[in-house]
Image 1 (cartoon, rainbow, N blue to C red):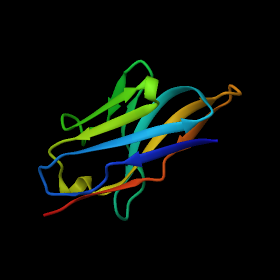
Image 2: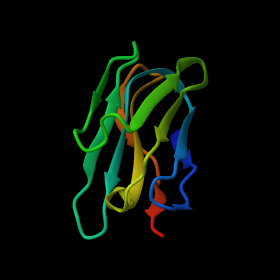
Image 3: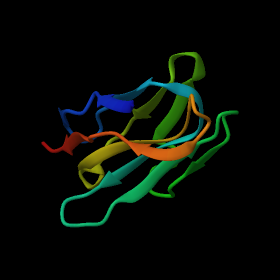
Length: 120
């Protein structure tokens, strides 16, 4: 069984910063792409940023220059540094990983989500 556990969500004022973490555990052989998605209130889930195992990234236009994704392959962990936060960044943030388990099967896995609220 593979689990993704996020942490770091909080209430922060506009202009502030937060760092989200997501650690994968279980019968993991390899992790390919990892990503952060978010679901703003009343809206559908959307891609924030995606990172390949080699470090290639794709950011949503709305977060370019403010958010930075990174990963530690040895720890099966992905991070999201969020700076200059805006009220429109308020959402539940979800971690996603394309996991290859010890039986060599590949599947997408999701974390449970962590709430980020940007408000004064």
